[in-house]
Length: 175
Length: 175
DNA sequence: CCTTTTTGTTTGACATGTCAAACACCCGAC
DNA sequence: GTCGGGTGTTTGACATGTCAAACAAAAAGG
Image (cartoon, rainbow over all chains, first blue to last red; front, side):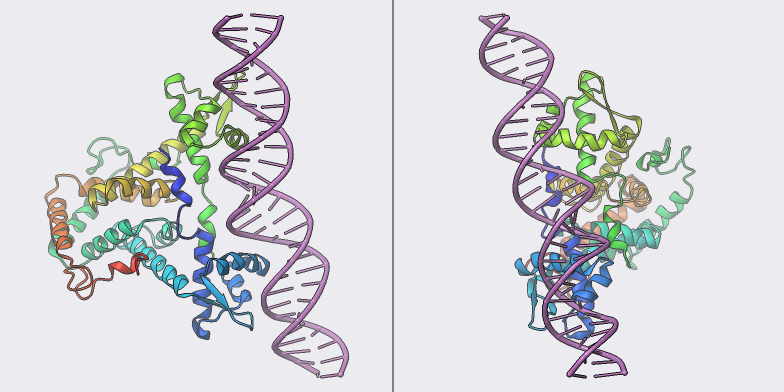
């Protein structure tokens, strides 16, 4: 009934998630220490915004600052980053390698979703895509068959998957 | 580089999406006309919040109001609702029926994601889950095989899908 | 050493979305 | 009629996240 309210009930928001990942990346070549400027440039936002957001992030124990005003992920922050990167990889691999969504779209979609999907779903998905893209004969056969059938889908009429009229277009906003 | 900023670049926000869906549902038995109170009760928020949000929604042409202060979706609003419901159904069906995520979790996850995934991904997913849960022999065979292998995954050691150590647990935040 | 640039913070503003509380209105009961 | 409850709006407050602009301090250049 109020399922929709859980949208904001995640360990971190989209913004915080990407701040953490930016710290992680920016600090890569400097022993984990990142500067506000580097984080801001990576995220494409102003230093001021980063400064404000870091207050929140530090207060929540996801990152620490040393005397020279440099930022480092805490153990917890690093754990979150790794979990999110794993989930993104699972989603992206599924979209791109299993159902053949174009690379760019797979990138955008997995980025939107990476911090939202549950570990349960991510875990299942991870296994599934690993199986589906393996050399298991059943997996290869199913994938081949799916691609063949989908190629034959002629949109509105006579889709071999949808049987009758293909309902695909209703998912988009195309008129 | 700034892929992450596209998170907010959707036709509607999560909140607006659910306002539209609440109008749709609430109006079902009244010829499409919904009252603020009904919308608020359905969403579990105050009438005041709904009132404010409707300003935005009306201004964007997603809903109209008649003289008796009742709300109705516009053609565009209805189109958005249908698209989102379709995407949710595709995601949920995949999670629940294909990779066997528990019903409740599938519900929550699909709700979080429904307004974020692209029509391209939703369309592919829609076809894929339709194929995978059909009576096509290749699909049935692959699904059977996947379930069998996954049942044998003993967590950290000797997962038949991951081959070596199963990396599944890194997707969650379990310590 | 002094100037200039870079860096980080703060401030005031805006946008979205939420709440409680006060108001105004309409409608039905009496 | 009038009174009370349900309904819709507005107001002031808060939370998050963004910006530009002003500022202070550190680093770099000379």
